[in-house]
Length: 185
Image 1 (cartoon, rainbow, N blue to C red):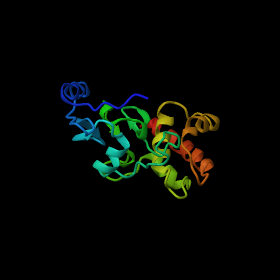
Image 2 (cartoon, rainbow, N blue to C red; image 1 turned 120 degrees about the vertical axis):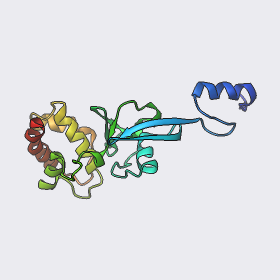
Image 3 (cartoon, rainbow, N blue to C red; image 1 turned 120 degrees about the horizontal axis):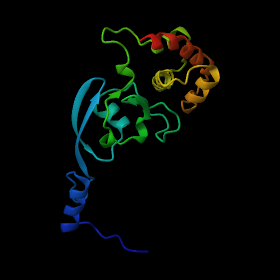
Image 4 (cartoon, helix red, strand yellow; image 1 turned 45 degrees about the vertical axis):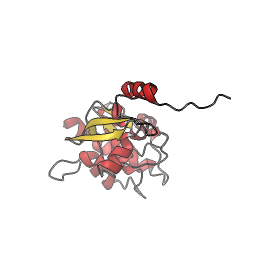
C-alpha cells in the first residue's frame, strides 16, 4: 500500500489554482458561488463540495426542500433549475447555472397558492407532509413537460418521489385537477 503524501508548497498552489478556490493546506477547496433562488440573487462563499440542498436549507434558510435519503432515491429534495426538475441532494451548488425555484417560490407574490399546491390541499394529497414539497415540485414539472395526460403517465413520471404514507391515489387526483389550470397559464 502506498503511503499518503501530504500536499504542500507548489503542489498545494497548483491544486488551489485548479479548483479555482482558496484551498489552504488541510482545508477543503472553496469559492464564491452566485445563485438566483426564487427570484433573489445570492452570492455565497462555499466549500466547492456543498450540495444545493445544503445551501438552500443551511445558508439561505429555505427549509421547505427536505433532506430525505440524501442519495437521490426519494425525491424529497426536488427543486427546479430553470425549467427542469433536479434532485438538490445530488447537485453541487457550484454547478448550478440556471435560476432555482423551490417550494417557497411557486406561490404568487400575493400569497395565492400555485394551482398544484391548492390541488394537493383539495385532495388531501399528503399525510405527514414530509415528501409534499418534492411531490409538488415534481408534479408541476410532470404537467409542464406533458407527462400528465393519463393516470399511467402520471404514476410513471412521479415514480421517483416516494411517499411513506402512501398518498399516491390522492397525488394523482391532485395532478389531474391542477393540469387544466396550469395549461391555461
